[in-house]
Every structure is written in structure tokens, then in C-alpha cells.
Amino acid sequence: MKQTSQLNQSRASQQAMSLIELLVVISIIGILAGLILPAVGIVKTKAKITQAVKDMADIKGACNVYQHDYNRLPGSAPASQIGWDFTYGTAGTGYGTNIASSPGAGYQASNAELMVILTASSFTPTYTPDPSVAGNARNPRRTAYFNAKSSGGTAGAGLGTDGVMRDPWGSPYIVALDFNYDGWVSNSVYNANVVNGFNTGLVRQGGAGSSTWALKDSVMVFSFGPDASFSDTSSANSPVNKDNILSWK
Image (cartoon, rainbow, N blue to C red):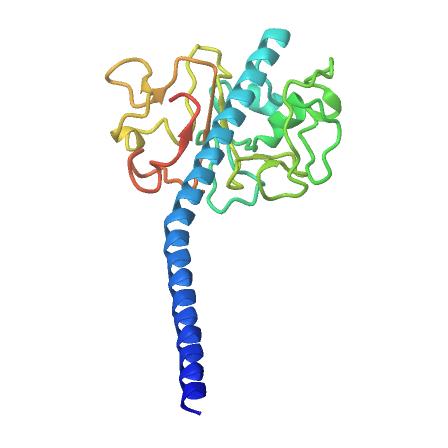
């Protein structure tokens, strides 16, 4: 009888030890997960940044090839005839904070206008382009200068059904073009002194006395980056702007 009792106690002890071991294993798994998950997040973010850089290079390259073929930059008549650099901002994209083109420009547009031209699209389900762009009027050869994966809707990364090209975090790419063809391009966010309080890779167009910061090029593109936000009243090195991804830097 005593032997049976000791045997039962031994089995209970073994079961108790097994439970403790299981808890230890679970704890170790939890610790490893805590170490691994942040690293996975960093890798995913870096992959998205790489994709954004590629997208911007493709957009810029498409605009440059288009200019070579047509001897003009892609854009509607209202945008290209304003007479100065035009910023394709957030108009009609659903993005919370508006980026407009230069003050007084009147006409506003998102990069959907560019995408219709550069993809040779004659029909976009939820976007009606300016009449001067419709029917491939600005790309009569119907050359597909730009290709991108469809997002399948009006949100998310890729080319939306509204014609807008969005970055990996779902924000529209901001594109500026040198429509006065003076060899300099600036956009309505990075042309300000307050933003350029920290080095952005731009220079004062016209010298030290100029208040306009620009790039010696014809096309510039930027993304709001992982935080999907920006400020045109804060330095480029401020928390809201420092993760922005710039095609020229």
C-alpha cells in the first residue's frame, strides 16, 4: 500500500515538473517573439522604403522618356500652361491634408493626371481627367511609359482605380514638374525656407538671396514615408518630416 502511494507521488511529481517545463518553454517563446517581431517589422519597413524609391525612380524615368519623345513634360493644358513649376498634390485623392500646387495656380490635380498620360489609359473607373488629357490626347502614340500593380481600389499601395499612384503606405506620391522649362524644379512643400532649415539636398534657386529652394532637374517626387504624414511648416528634420522619402536625395 505504501509502495503504491509513493508511486502515485512520483507520477504527480513528474506531471508537475512537466507543467513547469511547459511554462518555461512558453516563456522562452514569448521572449523570442518579443525580440523577433520588432526585427521583422524593421525588415518590412525597409522593404517598403525600397519599393517607394523604385516607384519614384520609375515615375521620374517615365516623365523623362516622355519628354524625350514629345519634347515636353507630361501634363494637361491647364497645368502646363500656368507658366511655372506645377506640383501634382493630393487633390481628389482622399488624403487628409491637402498639398496644392503653387498659390494662385488655380488649377489643381493629383498624380492621376500623370498616370493617365504615362500609362496610355483611356479609361479610369473613378477618375475623369481634364479634357486636354482624355482619349490619349497627350500621348497620341499610346506608349506605356509607366507600369504599376493595381491596388484594386482607391486605397492601398499601387495604381488605384481613381488613377492615383500611391506609395506602400497608401499615400499619393507628390510629383513636381518644371513646366517653365528653366532647368530648375521645385514643389509646393520643399520650396520653403522653413522646411529647408535642415539639409534637403536642394539649393536656393537664384542664389543666396532667393527664398525658393529647388533642384537642378525637371522632375522631383516624394513620399510621406512610413508615418504617412508631412508638414509644410516644419523643418525637414522634424519628426513628422524626417521619414519622408525624396527622389533627389
